[in-house]
Length: 113
Image (cartoon, rainbow, N blue to C red):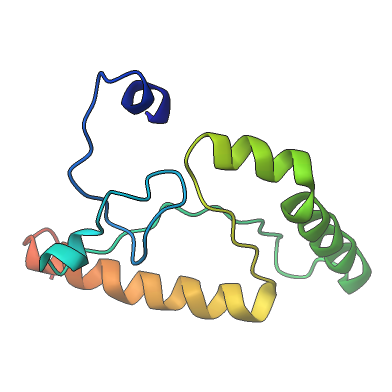
């Protein structure tokens, strides 16, 4: 969508992140406007339980290398997304917090009990 913003076809009023975006520095987070709204679109690398530790470590190293690669960062940032690599312990904490937050949102919408 960033290309449409830059072309003047879209005007962004706010975003649901928790900080200013480098790609859209003049666009406030909805939290800055007084709305308790935060959502992140994230992706991660998962392996089946029981994956041998050397294999998991090699995949973690490859993911870290990709996340820190200048060309990868350039492409992702050009699309307007921030890049934040988190290794297993930090990512696990992040996922658990996100699950709790999203469960509360879905409950408030009346979609689950």
